[in-house]
Length: 204
Image (cartoon, rainbow, N blue to C red; front, side, top):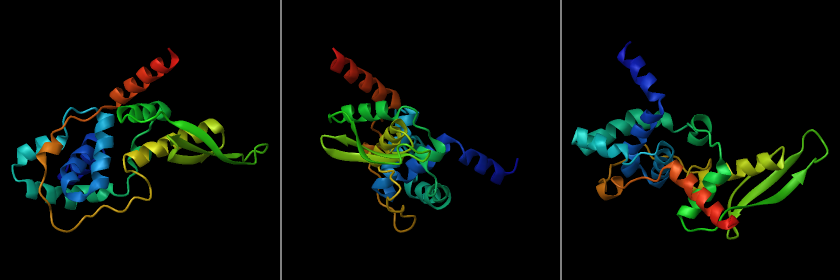
């Protein structure tokens, strides 16, 4: 296998996405940091992988320039929460995320509906927390619309919305704050456990 083929094969793995993004997070701006929070949440890592790679390279600027110029650029057009990652229990996950941030649980509300008695029925559902709109989405049924709205709310909370500004892939690098990069990440299972605990307290 040639080096080029190996690199592209490795690129398609989820760990490589985390590898690429983590190295670039400190230099690229808040949306990239939000992407990494989401990837770490799903992967359940105890420490961002950029910390280990930085320790290996020992030369922070060179490592980040390589990642930014050759690895992060192909990731710009990928939808991490659509093409690569499927959120199977969006409402439960959203409840856990809100509980972890000491916020009220999500509430779904029907915003609009059309063609209810036809084959092309459409429902628009919004997800709210303390009267704040977190996300909204359409669907052919109320259940589908609610699930999609919850997924959109999660994207918005992690800064992964479709309308987010493009990532800056040029310009000078800025120093890395290792105190932030070595903090333990919250795992997906932790959020789901918080959702279950809050549900049990509500039903008691």
